[in-house]
Amino acid sequence: MVDIAALARLGGVKKYAADEVFFNFGDRGKEMFIILKGRVGVYINSFDGFQTKVAELKAGDFFGEMSLLEGLPRSATISSLEETVVLIINDANFEQVIAQQPSLALRIMKGMSNRVRQQNEELSFLKRGSKQHDEEALEGEVTAAPAAPVALSGAIFPPGHKSYPVMAPQTHEPYLFDRDTDCPVCEKKFPVRMMRSSKMRLERVDPDMRQRFEEFEPVWYNIWVCPHCLYANFNFEFKQISDALKPKIIEHGKTLKSKINLTDSKPRKIDEVFLSYYLALQTAQQAAKPDSGKLAKLWIRLSWLYSDVGDEEMYEYTSREALANFKDSFFNGRRDTSVEQDQRLNLVLGELSLRLGEKEEAMKFFRDAIVRKGGGNNVLNKQAEDRLSELRKAVTENESGV
Image (cartoon, rainbow, N blue to C red):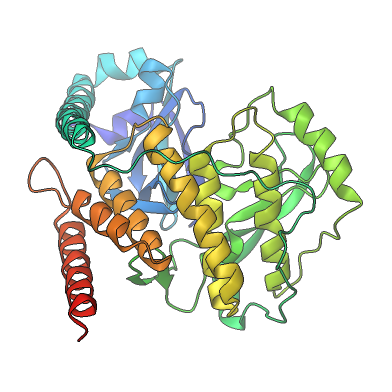
């Protein structure tokens, strides 16, 4: 049994307020944390850009050990769900801690062993799935990978975009608080609107994986924009920018300054939200080879926003861009997703295909979302089976003229 009181005498103790972030996915770090009091949420960045809570940790649990032991980037985002007190163990005191508390070393080893076993199971499933796709491709049953979608260039907004007289409702305010952050590109400080994740209550998840929360819409606040250099990115990926891109972003920002009027009203206006997403697209496209997965996350959110304001023409345009980029990421990108994430991606591809009238494509993706064994999510299996059944029925009725 780990003696927490003894550990507290060896390491630094720190208090975190509710909704405070310990670290974000991809951050570098050289310390681990043991929870003395309170609770934290463990969030992963899903393929669709949502931070999905996969676990809660309580007093006595620990996190961050992989970065301490191997110097690896953080594999998840951790934030406090309530006021939380932690013990911080770093390079300076780790050996002393392990020497006095060998049971902690055993717990860390068991945790790492479980993680490796889970990754091996998922790799085994992905290899089987890859073989199945190769066989189907030989039979001509798999759609060829699409050409890379055309990047947005020139004007900030695409043709057809309008101004919309919509403002955030007052119900959003209790879920937000202000905080300053540093821009990783120009290194200047600016204020951002943070979301109180501990207060957010998930109401439902739409078929295309859009999360709906009671009285709050996080899509309005997912993008942070530096007002100094116009660097824009998802809030949970904001600090993850390569040094090579920084000069390009600064130069591009100078050309954008004369084209936009950057404001951040309270309550926020939908026009400001649209601008933030299109600026994030501009940032993403500064890379020599833009990440189609990142572009897809941005385009699908834009489709949701256009749907909310009732602009059907732009809803279809952005849905088509989202589908093209998701396909490019799926067929041509680096595949390091889990089995469940692949299920979600296939479901989104199916929904977007169906939205655009591509029924055969939709059925293929819904079929691929069904995992009979090997770590699939049963809820997602059921969703895929139901959508496939509904689509087959609709196609049959249409062919028979019912």
